[in-house]
Image (cartoon, rainbow, N blue to C red; front, side, top):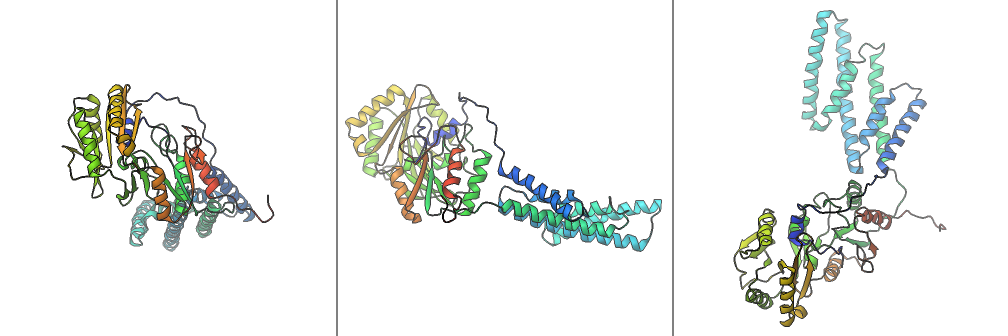
Length: 452
């Protein structure tokens, strides 16, 4: 199994649980100094060194600004920002040079001409911005104006303003080269693209507020962009996991509903589903009705999750429906479960004594031997408990095997919170542990022959 052992909140109920106040121990954690901070300092130092080697002929400040602008969390963004900065600098420098030539041609300015000069500079800003539009480089408009104004406002009275234009351009190019170079610099590493990495979601990747730390999100996305084969396995329904992982660039489908489905997040498609047969579905429904209970019956129809339910006097039932039906990925239908459908799973939530009694009825009917039945207490609703009924083959292990065949990967590494059940055990609350270990396992430092 590939999930944390947090059964108190699952499936759709896990989403509603996010809105409930939980009593959790909060520890003061000081974030470590990240590599981006260190690389920024290195880039600043290199800008100083290059400036010294140039005899301080330029202005190191502009090199440092360009280097810091290019120091992004993702290398792709770093290169993109470098291109923007370079194009903006070229446009601004050219128009700045044009202004200097025009001013030289018109001669010295009188007081009245200074006013006209201010109007002329403002008009050139319009032309500069429009130039970036014509070149389809609107992202570079800000830098174009900054470079232009730094020339015509602060340095037009220099003895040799043309030299400043050149140095301004050269300073920026130096900073861009240093910034991009330092940002992509790293130790030579292997990239284990032959491994399928699987992690739980709750208490592993996600923290207390159902989100991921900035460090984990950035590093995980970086490795995913590089081609790491990684996905998650969870008890949640696709509807309740889409929001927490919206910023994660998962390329592989996720294992959801405790192994009942394999879901493609981007295509919004169910690639593999373990369903309960019509005969067994109707048998379970008949037993539920006979006991005077109601349930949430989850069915997948044309890649849509449909949840059939009946009205209940229970306050928790009504509250769940009221809160969860707001999701665009869930379709609640107040009607009896159709006899011609096959259920993915049944969910009941009642006071613990009612759930215990119904579980005994399931045992007497032999359903616990023929289907997968989970019974567990609720953390969100004290005194309540859940029962979930799946196809007997709806396990995370089976779905992992299916995913391995689909990807052609034979080796797996799993992350979870239960000792003895995972390759890497993660303590609850240590949401960065998974990504720390992924970095070590996916991209170990290359060793030269003879190294130990």
